[in-house]
Image (tube, rainbow, N blue to C red; front, side):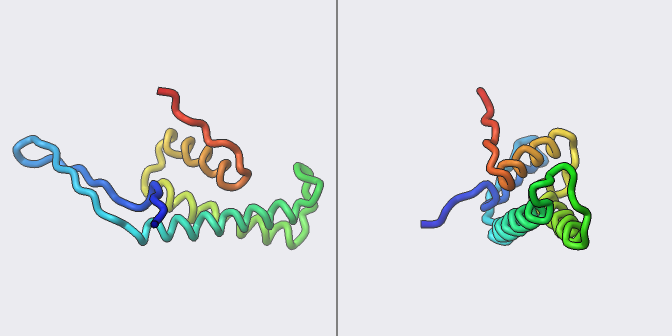
Length: 115
């Protein structure tokens, strides 16, 4: 059985000439695979960055390994943000991405919507 995720399908809604909405759903395994790879890369880069900081977490020892870990963390962050947000860079989208990223990296609980 395949695990379903948020990124397994693309839902497109178009406005037809007669004014009705047409919705189509198609599978996008490339997007799901890109998300899986970018999440794994981010988790690895975050772990390496925390390891480079040692026990001195806000006062880091800025060695070559620290800068190298920071560079890889930045690259992984950029790839993950692109996979999650796409071209949408609205403040609400970035806020949602940030909360989700903290749950991916640090295992923080993702806040549930209260309906």
